[in-house]
Amino acid sequence: MEKFILSFMGILAALTFLQTASAKGEEGTVHEVTVIRNTFKLNPSEITIKAGDTIKWTNTDERKHNLASIPGSGSGDELEIFSVMEPGAVYTHAFKAPGEYPYFCFIHNQMTGKVTVEK
Image (cartoon, rainbow, N blue to C red; front, side, top):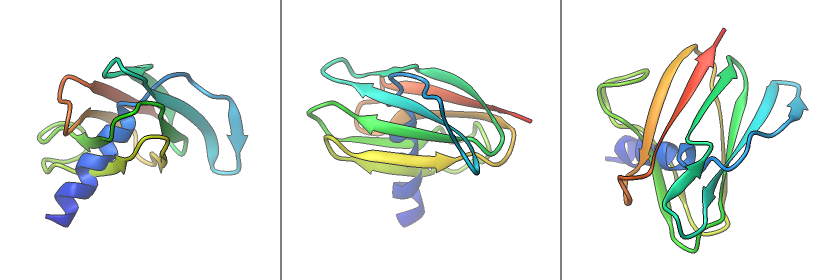
């Protein structure tokens, strides 16, 4: 159950794309995604990054969102919750392995996104 909740929260975080950032760190580039206030949308909803880069999701909405992977797609068959994001919360996740990582908000399933990780 805990793994399920953690997976779900991760997808929710991914759904909160607002803009791609340009902060360069030691581990790679940090890309910013925002949950857009009162729209149930992420900007950007899809983003392509390099292996080792990080996504930073920011919830600018007044509602809580839970980001989670989509079972049977991406890196595994199980639902993985990345983050439960309260209003104003920030969540980061470094993507190490190339692949496609689709996700959604477990609470608001119309909120979907995808992180594509290249070598």
